[in-house]
Image: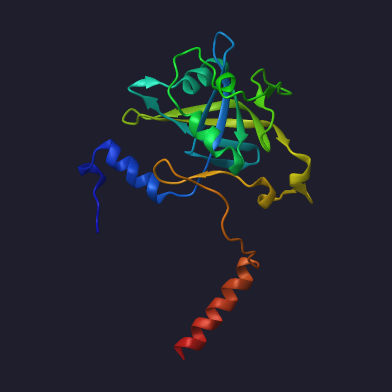
Length: 213
């Protein structure tokens, strides 16, 4: 089947692309409104950009043609926190995506405790497994797109002590929540540790040669 996105509505394309690009990590973002209200919202168009310097990106769209609070708050304050939610927070993460009147705080309604960050003024969630303090580096906006890409410099990591082993994150213990198509979420599935790519390449090419001979 071939599908031409030009012949589909934005909603139809949304369903296709979010069903194909899976699973997606979730940036559970806290920002500060101009009146000091803490805003919290999840975004699954989120990923790393580079490790030197450490940078991440998140795409934030509009709702009914209006900028979401997260979008406006990041532009205004030039900072935000990416909180990493574990699987146990699935219901809370999904609930925090609800459209609320401006000035209503998701952290208050959901009774999520926050704590101050080290460098930026925006607080982070207290009970998540990890969080990253970020300062806005750039916003990329295209005239024909309803979303903008926000690029943030990671200024500080906050990671639960038991997650760091040999300077690496124990992904099983992190147990991150992921988004898939529709109002569906997923946890970690099967794990398999691979050898060096060069070793595996040699092994597979030898196998192909044996099979073809």
